[in-house]
Length: 439
Image (cartoon, rainbow, N blue to C red; front, side, top):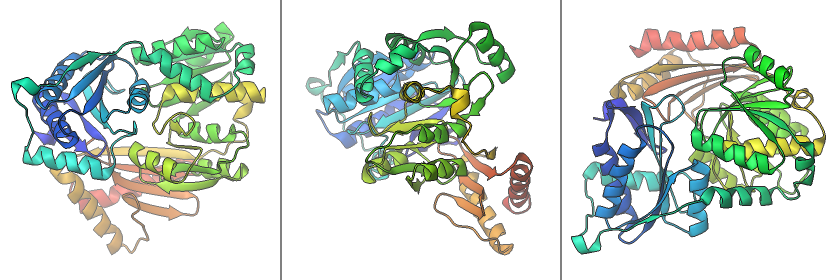
């Protein structure tokens, strides 16, 4: 059953009808419930995906069967769920999402009492219960209750705005903002919050940069955001500039005001543009493994101001979790206070090329392929380290070969000064797979 899904520390990912089934969702939720213990309370939320009601029913049944109280937030954003867990001091929460690819791609995400992705120790304990199938079901008179919880988005928005302090400058700027967002709850949330902050919102379907530029000129917009999921910004566009996901974190760092906290968290494969932006602000950079749970843990332990990977950013001022809405609001607020446009703000940023190739494999071949690549590198006497998969560093160029957290795949990522160099690095990595890995 697990060949067509990815089950790991960060959650369960897969396709509906291809391993990602109500039965599997029910078993995992039963494992989570057993780990938490009878009488614990969990929050549950979904996005507006077509498959969400199916998997929600499986979650509710398992929570009830194990004597867990479910506080059902209905259809909402992931950030709202995480904030609610913290506010109500619950044992944790579950998010059912169709992810950003399509309705057929689904995800089941577990969060702990801190509103964060579960720690490795917590996740491994739940997975042990799942694999041994030692579920603690209760008798009929101890079944869990379900409570419907409504209108939490407004409370979360208020907390977010309060954390940023005086918003007078923001409101006076009266931004005209384009939003392309396929996630209906997130699109609604952003529209309502930004409207409160004096913005005028223009919704659009992202196609390409040229089309977006035409849309910006036609409506005299200040900025456009392409949001792929509740957690990630895939692109930011101005009248002349086009920022990809890899450029978002350097931008946010460059807009940081002076403050007491002087540390940021990134993962090992973020571009050197992050380090460059941090150096200009005299900030310390701490690198960790890829994954929200690792970034969040470091954010707290290092008392950092922010952390992230690519277009996913978390702010200590909000909570230790990625939220695209928080990133949008933070960027707009910073632009307003700095009295600059997005086109001007990006000028100091350094640029690096990034190329990523995913090698989709049967589950049983993922780790054997990684081992074969490792052996091939050793035979070639290539220098590499393994803080997060395989890393090969040559000056400011970086090659990463690691297993995906959300798919049964080996992910090859090259970060280099230009596209030609990045392509050559990926080609070299693929040659090891072809010759030694036995794809």
